[in-house]
Amino acid sequence: MSIITLAGSPSQRSRSSALLRHAANRLRAGGWSIGELGLRDIPAEELIEGHYASPAAGALRARVAAADAVLISTPVYKASFAGGLKAVLDLLDEKALAGKVVLPIATGGSPAHLLALEYGLKPVLSALGARHILAGVYATDKQVRVDEAGQPHIDDDVRQRLEDSVDRLSEQLRPHAYVANEAYDLGRLALAGGFSV
Image (cartoon, rainbow, N blue to C red):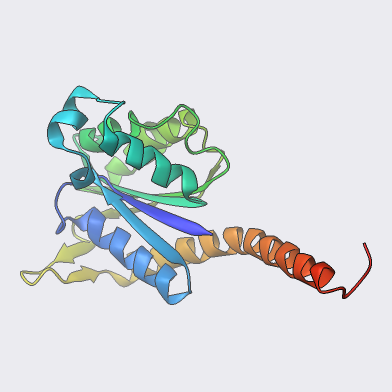
């Protein structure tokens, strides 16, 4: 089982990226394998011009296809999720998120921008085939700060909501991991002559 994070901000010091890193670290601590993707993984010209056939776009699609879950973070600008993130999502196949657990994360200037997550980003994720979208985590700029050293400071309420959502994602994936491991163990037992098939 693998999990991919997709950062929709070009800045490593952005608030939305800070929340995404915190979520990824919690998942790593739980034993999950985490891969990271972001706007920087695709050359700007290819991203802007939508070069679907470029090697970078192909690598993006392959990594998303191999993931069982995708965490997506974005800043909200002028009541909409980041245009750079939309450009990345446009490079994915039509049903790239089908069968995956998706956790959207966003930050914005005020609580009113929460609607951009619900009515802007989630419909796009659904159009990409996502049917299992967890309740998103939204925080205002005042609730997440990044200091000069690049260290995030997340308000307790936001941290708790984020960690609860990450734990829920883990719970959604664990039954699948158990079934895969059980099938593997039964196969090994059969090969060893432990029971007759």
